[in-house]
Structure formats: structure tokens, C-alpha cells
Image (tube, rainbow, N blue to C red; front, side, top):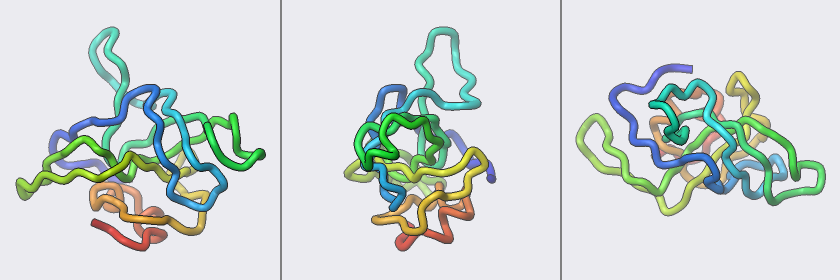
Length: 132
């Protein structure tokens, strides 16, 4: 895992429901917390593109439901600024289920993946079909 250059806009907080865009059997997950988040006292932890989160599976196959999983945010609706000054936003919040180390559990990723997430997590970049 590599670091992200600059200050990343964080658009996903605790309780956010994310679409799952891989083929692990989960459809939606709800964010529980962001490991490694160091904020101000009483501030709600939040995550941005390329951050790993701990989440609970809301909808999906019966084996996957109510499981606690690690996931990497690959798209967010909140606009964020790239290093070249371009503002980027997606039409949904989406994540890919991974292991604690960042290895993808699924074998296919549907839809676009932000370049920031692909640069930070090489296994997601290898599995992604489209990197924006």
C-alpha cells in the first residue's frame, strides 16, 4: 500500500452505505469504522478514495450477510481535487471487499475505479477493468 499525495477529501463517514462492485456475493455494505483514522476528539471517522474501511454486509448472499469485512473505497460522490487541479466525482459510493492486507477477495471488479485507489492498492489495479 502506498500513501496518497496531498490532502484527500473524505466523503464516506461511519454509517455510509456503499455499493460492492466485485463478485464476492455482497451487494451493499455499511461502514462501521476507519482503521488508522486520527482525528479530533469526538469527530466521526471518515474515509476517502483509496482508504480501507471496516464494514458490515447489509445485502447479499445468505453466506455473506451480517459478516464484518474489510473494504477499499474506489468511488465517492463527494467531489475531490486531483493534483493537476481537476475536480472529480462519481455518481455513487462504491467499494471492493479485500483482506486486511489489501488483497482482493473477488476476481472481477465492475465499473470504474478511481486512479488514486488503483495507485495505492496494486491488487485492485490488476483486477479493475476501467481506471478513471
